[in-house]
Image (cartoon, rainbow, N blue to C red):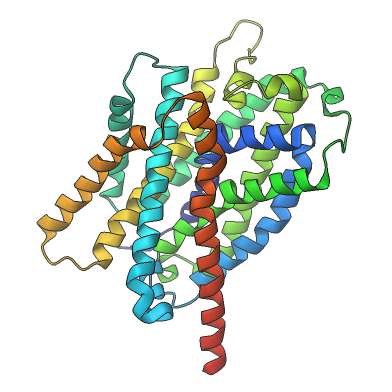
Length: 363
């Protein structure tokens, strides 16, 4: 029986990780900073993002039979335990933020009378179920969700194309260079930094590993292309001043869709593509956390399971309290949280690459 992970399914994880908290949080920041020139920021981020993607692939090619915790053990020696704990803590915090983001979205758009805890609890049931399988199953589910997401996205494009007004992109180049570049780096922080989570899987466990890098690039391009189109549709249909008023401009955009002049109110169905991103993203976060417990080499399986479920339930209780939902606190979290995650990850990647290159030169 082939236990290898399909390279396409595994690479499709990038598509969902990039959108997990960007849609609904990061996108509104981009629109508020670079406004109708946001498409320029996206193109710049796309080019710069290849550097970060190559950094991820470079680290993944080092000691291909090891996961990220084991690689850190080799590279950082006596500091590895502390670094791995920091990495685990960052991912756990990111997991909590993702749950909070989901609960806010669901409560605002669908279930305004339902407690956030209940929303997160019900959402976590299928997440825990699939994490208790294996990464091969996760990759297969990810690929299926990707296909469904693309179908839904194309259906959205078909329903919105008649509303496009290119005059809403004018005037061009009204934002400063600093604003456009700032938006580009925010995109990289939200869109690309979560890619580091895939390092939890050793490359040798992937079927046809030589094709994996190409698959990464394909899904990277598809993810950015979809993001570029979503942003362009928002600006061209709403106009930037109106678009900046929405907490979830992408959801508001879907409300305009009708098919054949009688099929309306399809936004709830079409918005499920973002729920796929939150689902797969949460799965990878929790899978990362679970593998950290394996790395700790806790001898008793029962103890390991107890700790695992304690982390989940603590996340459920802390998340709505850690990330509050008043207007001011929402904007503070939205603006600054991602840096708490992305900057340490980026620094760690740079140091890891320097140490890998140093080791290769020594050999």
